[in-house]
Structures are given as structure tokens and as C-alpha cells.
Amino acid sequence: MSRLMFIFRGLGVGGVESVIVNLCKGLSNHERYVLLLHDDVRCPVQAKTISINSRFEFVHVLFKIKRIKREINPHYVISANEPFNLFNVLTKVSGQRTILSFHGHKTKFLSSSEGLVRGILWRCYQALRCWYYKFIFKRLYNKADLLVAVSRGVAKDLVDNFGADPSKVRVIYNPFLIEDIEFLSQESLGEYEPIFNFPVIITVGRLARSKGQWHLLRVFRPLKDRYPSLKLVILGEGKLKGYLVDLSSRLGLKTHVWDRDALTDDYDVYFLGFQRNPFKFLSRSKLFVLPSLGEGLSNALIEAMASSLPVISADCRSGPREILAPDTDLDKQAEGVEFAPYGVLMPPFDGKLRSANDPLDDVELMWVSVLDRLLTDEELRKSYSLRARQRALDFSLERIVKEWERVFSMPY
Image 1 (cartoon, rainbow, N blue to C red):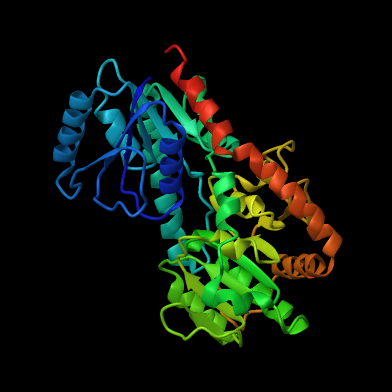
Image 2: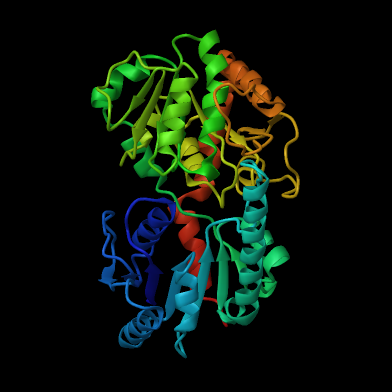
């Protein structure tokens, strides 16, 4: 039995948080500690938790982490994303294995969509960010014992663009509790039941620019004209809420907002906020749509597939291609409609924030056409529903835990 320590911000709500919670459950034959830099523990975890106040100055935080590492003396210390990977490698203790995990594609989508000045500033920021990561990989991160990427796309990005040592990079997908998802998907919808008496397109994700939900709203508008009973459900919270709600209303869509409106079945678009059990909504929907501009792996996509839901996804960097078309070239990106083995891949959106009066561009029109077909082709939806569930099993907790057990048995 190994002693494991995870370093992370907190156990609130989010994709990385669910990964830590699931891993702690699956690695139950090891002694597990979770070191949190905030005392946000909304998600119960099967591990001993230790919270420190990260509001202290940088050096003080490093001192506290190193002291705790020496007191507990774990065999493996695993961190996720920034700045926790930096904290982990800077507090490396002799005899303890340091593992850094990366959950996002660091070469982000570049956009100058809000004017020339903002475009130039954004690109300058991106250039500085790339320089910073190249510097810390060369000077610090490559000194870790292992660099774990959540997808082949993330791994390729780390090696090709930031100088990660390829001999230390290993791909381990995020784990999913497939049986739990199946059980939770049967939970009653309660007050939301009337919405799902109608055909529903659903998406799940933070209301953030990287998720591209405004493109989906624009695509939904002509579909609503063709199918008057069609509903769009958006699960998630975030900083882009005001813009998205305003855009939805300006598009002429009757819009429900979770913290503003009484729930009835006569809305067109439903912003339902964060839902602790999204699976009961997924399992009752007709289609899942991922309009993201960038991902690491996309937990929401796999959770939708585990709920036996047909999926259509932007072929963004990274994750959707290796989930839906795992045997294809990762460098390929859909330029037209690609009916992949486990779902439909589409050209990514351009990421430009638009108003309700702006006409749909060619990519948005292509999405309208494909969604139209999927809504009417029941045989195609059934086929993708079965194949989606089959593919989701490749990301089951049992399979992913075996990958981590191999890591713990590796010589260094």
C-alpha cells in the first residue's frame, strides 16, 4: 500500500474536482490525503483532508506545503493544474515521487474578435504565457518524476509547444463512475419534468468564453423556427451569464434563468445553473451539443455518452476527436461534417462574440443543417446512442485506476 497525497485548490464543483474525488474512491487500497489550499469541501472525498490558507504570501504557502509533506511523508504527491503543479515541484522532498497532472490544452484559441487593440493585447498575453510555460517546463516541471496528461492532445501540446520531456509524459484519461451515472440518470426530474415532455437539446459547462455557448444559442434560433416545441437546456454557472441571457432574449427566445424566473414549460431556452445531478437531465434529452472553443478532454462529453446520449461536438483542441474518433490523426481538424464512430465532429466556431443581429456564418449554418438532420433521423440517433455508451466504458474508473496502479509500480 502506497501513501498518496493530492494537492489542489478545493473540492468545490468542477471537472478536476470530480477527477480527484473519483480517484480517491478508486484507489481505496492506498492511504490517501488531499491537501487543499482553500477550505471549500462541497464534494465529499474518501481521503483525509488538510486545508491551508493560500491567501498568505507565496513563500509562506510553500513553507507550509513542504512541512506537511515531511510530516505525512507520502510516497507519491500528485497535483493538478496551476499554481498547484508549481507548488508541488518547488516543495519536492527527497524520496517522495512528484507527479504533475495537466487537464487543459495550454495552447489556447487565439481571437481578436473584439477589435484590433484587444486582439493585439490578447496575442501579447498569449506570447507571454507561452514563454512562461516554456521557461518553467525547462527549469522546473521536467524535474518532476512524471507528467500526466489527461489526453493525447494535451500530451502532444506539452511536448511540441512547451518542451515537456517526452520520456516523462504519460497519458491517463479522467475516470468516470459509469454505474453511478446510470443510477443517477434514473432520478426523478421533479419540477423539471414538464420541460422534458418536449424534445430537448442540452449542453453542460461553465458559462465562460472557452465554452462557446453563444454560438449554440445562435444556431438554436433557426432550429426553433423549424421545430416550435424544441427546447434548449444549458447547465452551468459562470461570468458570461449576463451576455448569454441577454443574447438569448435579443434572439427572440423566451428565456428562463434559474435565479430569476418561476419554472414553467413555455420557455424556449432554460439556463438551469449548476445541478449536482446533471445525469437525470442528460438521460431525458434528445441530443448533447459541445460548442467549446477549447478543452483538455471534456468530462461533459463523456458523461453525456455514459448517459447513452447521441453527441455532436466541435472538433476543438483537444479531446473531442480522440473521444469520438480515436483511431484518426490528432492533427486533423474537421472542415466539414464528420460522422465519426462515436459521435458527430464539426468544424470549431471562430469564437467571436456576436450580437443577435449578426447573420450566421458558414460554420454556424453547417451546425444548423446537421442538428436538423439529427433531430429528424431517429435511426442515426439510436445508433449513436448505443455506440456512445460503449465508448464511455473505456473511461470507467476501474480501467483508469489500473493505469494509476501501473504508475505506482514503475521504477524511477
